[in-house]
Image (cartoon, rainbow, N blue to C red; front, side, top):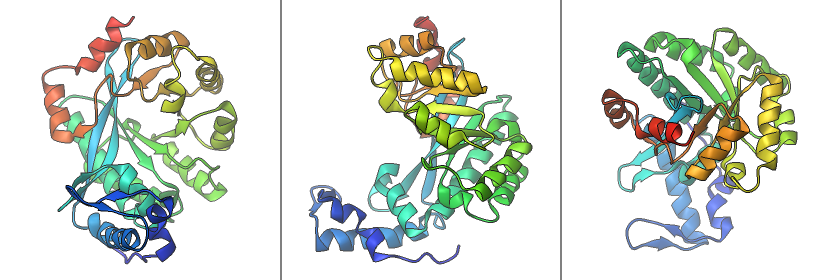
Length: 298
């Protein structure tokens, strides 16, 4: 793996926030010099995390709202730190993006998603797998080659892979061309965490989008406030995109997203992210309870 430059302004991200940070059981790193040195240490460790096999994938189910069946999984990154245990993405992704570690981490996640998707196919389960793609990855000249490489090496059908775009700003023209080429071989392209129709219009422009995922902040307002959610479902339908409701946590929310016409849903109501082995164990004994929850709400 190439060297990663540690930039001092980047590692001060959390220190500037004025929020104390946990540093293991019973200890807290206060804002200021100590917090800055703590983030510098984390940045150096994160620079090697992908190479050391510390970046792992956990999978969260996504269900089809027509029949309640599990049809897709989203691969979500976790940092298995040797001393801190499993670190959630909100703790390290901003640091990875700021220090340049995101490309290596993203490639590990892409490889993991393809390998797991291929493993599911070999057991007779054609389940889609989605993986987040950061702006830094799209900016890499060989990103399309990496996608094709992981698909070929794993044996995963391209049609079962979806790339979720997490960048909220419009994608540069060169990156859009890259995505168009990737989509041409059958890979799906999704825009993640969409909050308004105006944002959706800006983000999908000139891109080969197949799916629109509505942010949990919009879903959280359901069932009482349906305005924005309804607009986004209508936008997706008008443009031929599949619509996915993120962050569904309650039965009233589930009823609402079904009534609004969402195609799919994802959230704690259907299952939390779990490692591949645990997800496979659930699949081996039948569809997770998520499917039955969705059906019972109809």
